[in-house]
Length: 222
Image 1: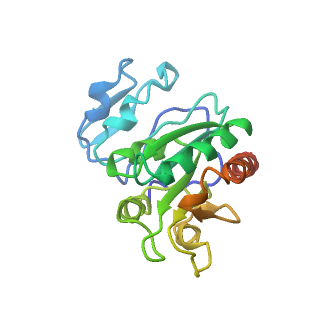
Image 2: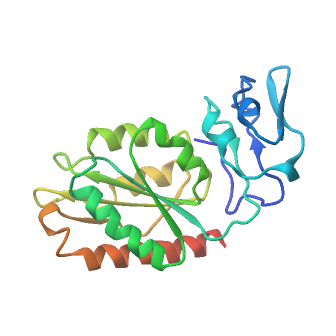
Image 3: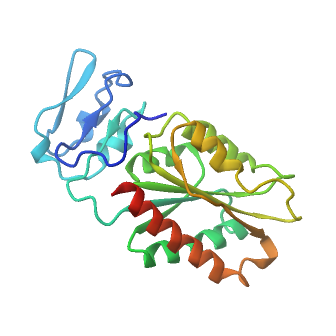
């Protein structure tokens, strides 16, 4: 997982380098507009944290995800909403959930489940992961994303899950949350799963789920 932390990241010193991950490639220093980061030997170091503008370039440039941006202003909380298949029912469900997250006072950001979205996880305060059910399991894109996510987390960070299915599910709706708990995340007490045919009819349920998650996540992070 990314470097494991408890609760809120310190807001006094952005950015921070995970020395166990850093390989000294210099990619972060190359893209930094304020010369906040420099490389000495095989290690990136923070030279002037107060000069950081939180542009996020260093986090996105690092090939091994060793940079964590410690925001000076942690409000509103950023909730990353990940879904597996564009233009499908799960994406529509994600948008309904995002509206509820926004109502809670958090700032939602939607991305598709792929390796390129890992930096977005690093920059988020909380994460919601969505999947299309594949024979009572996760879709391949979501499963692969979670495979990467298990190494890219901070201890105690809020995570939730949602998804759609074609046929009624029989397993307990905690398949993502149970794994996330083992990896050190703080899972939301329940997941939201519904038939793909019911996504529009149950948009209110999705909105409430997003709102409740946003409120809960703020409590966990306070």
